[in-house]
Image (cartoon, rainbow, N blue to C red; front, side):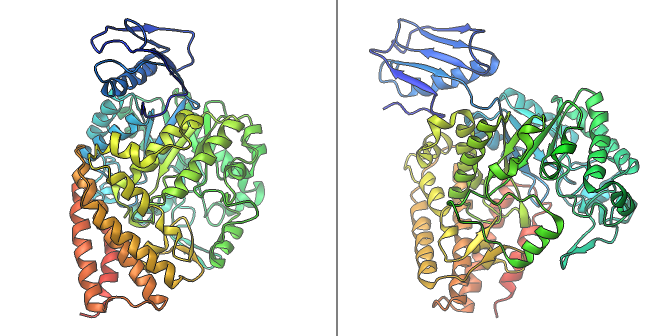
Amino acid sequence: MIELFPRPRLLTVAGAGAALSAPIAEIPDAGLPDQGFTIDTSGPEIVLRYADDAALRYGRETLKQLRAQGDGAWPAVRIQDWPDFPVRGFLLDISRGRVPTMESFSHLLGVLRLARFNQLQLYTEHTFAYTGHQDVWRDASPMTAAEIRTLDALCGNAGIELVPNQCTHAHLDAWLSHDAYRYLAECPDGCSIAGTSLPAGTLKADEESAAFVHSLLAELLPNFTSRQIHINCDEPFELGRGAGAAQVAELGTGEVYVQHLRRLMEPLLAQGYCVQFWADFISHHPELARSLPPGCTAVAWTYESPRPEGERIQIPPDFQRLVDELDLNIAFDGFAEALRDLPDSGLPFLVAPGTSTWNSLVGRIDNAIGNITDAVRTGLASGAEGLLLSEWGDNGHLQAFCTSYPPIVYGGAAGWCLAANADLDLPAVLDRYVFHDHARVLGGVLDTVGRVWDRTGQRSFNSSPLQAALIPEQRHLITHDPDTGLVEAVIATLERALADLTRARPDSPDGSLAVRELAAAIGLARHGAWRLGRAAGLVTPGDAEMRADLATWIAKYRECWLARNRPGGMERGFGPLTSTLNSYAQ
């Protein structure tokens, strides 16, 4: 049986294949779709026809997979392949605690290349070493200009465009917490909304803050060869609640937002950049979207898999009050709701599902698959230009690095051709092509532990009950009570996974590290399940044993963290973990 990844759009098995020594003819073919290629291994020579450089690379990699499955001769096949989406991007949050090492970026690029992603974005709030702004990034182990240039070259060699990504309006509390920048804040002292206190995080919507942003971008952008930029501009919660209150009262929030969006975009467009921005705010104001200039692309996001018909995601009442007061466009019912009127606005747009790894320790792979599938199906039906799979780092980016690989593999394959890859055997692909696990264990363990989050009796939104129980000082969106029997079954599943993991034999560059970090993450998840079970009345280890268990897994996880990531920001996640540890009597 021929196993290719991603599965091609059209594959037919021919008669006898050519000898492995047969010459390979590479023929450009302008008649093929962009990034498209064909392969024929049934003749006396191997023929690869390709549309462009990307297609040539994808065709060569497919030939490499075919050759590895030949037994004295090429498998006899004819393949026709091209992508559903021309744009297949991956966004990695490097601002919530985790900034990977350059070696880790290399591992990530290998998986992105395998899954045929052609864009990478590093979501940045304060983790670039801007000149003169050391107070903001000093303790964050930021990316330097030289590192960005090195990564840009590595991405180029892999056929991936490194797109600059910098917050320019909201989510800038790491800047506005410093006195030197408070004058730029919409609400310098923060604000309270529906009983929730928010720190200063949004810049004023005026020329002064736009000039500040463009001074940063003038230093950032020359380090990239890309002529695109993502300026974010999502969730400006404070807009109109402070410095801009009079302007919003006169013009309305939507008009003030769009005017400022143009202030940020237009100088970049004049320089020849294409500008991406998050669509959550503008989708509330489709009439204003039509006033945006050519050259910008809206990115519509939502991160939960659609529920069965008639069932709606349940969220805690206090969060619902916040959603209602802010009029947040959180698409609880999937991408049909997230896109709203975007397809009719005239704006080009991308769909942005998530990896579902954040706030989970070990992933939520079933949610990720549902969310990605919904994004691709709805996006294709609505005219989206591509997808941007997003990996966030809420609450300290505590998920194991390797938990990103399953959704990346599935997201890349779905964005390439959903019809051929919707029922992908994800564990098999991970073991064969990502981890090279000769025991065929690691992919299955990742899949198994990535499905326990929804099996405790509790309901969660954007997180796992296991991390919520492990670190109660973090805010998580959890409803319902745990079920003792279900929690007990989750504990048993995690313990079997730990035992199975000892049999893994990966020989990928980061395979052994993946085993160690996943074991530590499973250990922490089991500890969370113990705490959840204890709250539900389940008999669990005593405090002394709980303390010893947690101390062991924290130490192991710290070691793996430092093997993957830079030290700056580490305590953003590990500090709350240590607080849980200290809650046990010594």
